[in-house]
Image 1: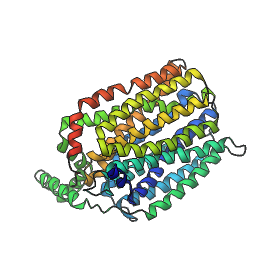
Image 2: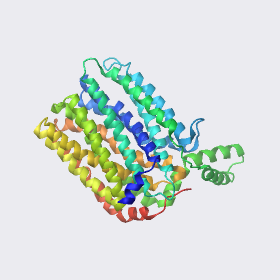
Image 3: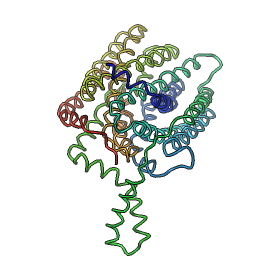
Image 4: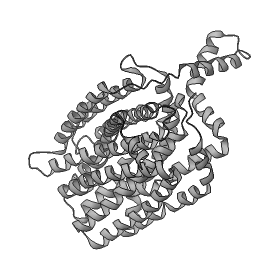
Length: 449
């Protein structure tokens, strides 16, 4: 236990925590706040659910993640340069949301939300790479500690800061567009921390140059144009090499098994999360109650269990952390079925939020540590983005149909949440099947180059 606590006493993890806030905050802009705004404007559950397709961007960000490992912007270093640029663009888009009307500019709202998602997903690539790169090769136990701080930060951005707009919405003088202007200012404030963060001392130049030379040597056999060979070699080393290395290192069968598990693990939680705000408002909870319980209470619960989850992973291993998290996820979803039957009971709501916060924190810490473990640090941005995007695919694109599912059940929320609990079971069976592979990966040193 002493070693677990010691792993958290590292100044670098403070930057990881603050970057986690920056990562979680944009989900407020295009998630819960946007859902509440559209619900107050009278849009249907199905229409609000379709707005969740914006989040599909997080599922495909690996397509451009390769450039964040290769292209250095001319300020603040490889990782921080990308982070602060995306933060400024997110703040600008958030301000644009404040000048739109849901009645007249629904398309522009959707388009601006899409750009927020693109910039946020790109920011996440750089932040995830920063978290992996800032941990030295001989500090494997700090992967779980870093995952805990990133998760706690994410929920501080999503839950802590995310409560602010709901309190403001219940005040007489604040409309949703004006609230977006405040969110833009908060995002600008988060850029200050990026200026003072330490840039990781990771140089992947040698690995990428070696890959370029290998590709160019092969291309020269088939092409007489040196310029063409150089251009293609650069492109292949940038785009293909991170994926080739991942599959070669793990083997195709294991690599595909790991990616399939990552995809399946959080689908049930995603279906619940996409419709949660709509559910709370239909059941009869006020914006202030949603802000207090769903955001503020959930925030503190998540921070506490993020730290505990990280300590458990350090002590007992990532496999056990994932298994406990999966079982708890399935169980916690049933609490919302109880609320659907009981009505707007604040005590029951608080209990459900506490249990759901525990499972969300624990499962996220375990998954983030697991994906971080699989990355080669020379391609940390690309390989993490590939695996995280698969996890997000279930949470975003697939879950955007959640509104149709509720409508198909004639608004039977209780049955809907039972279905989300059942969605967790396939991933747990798959996790058990690859147990030995995960434990072997945990025993392997971190990969660098």
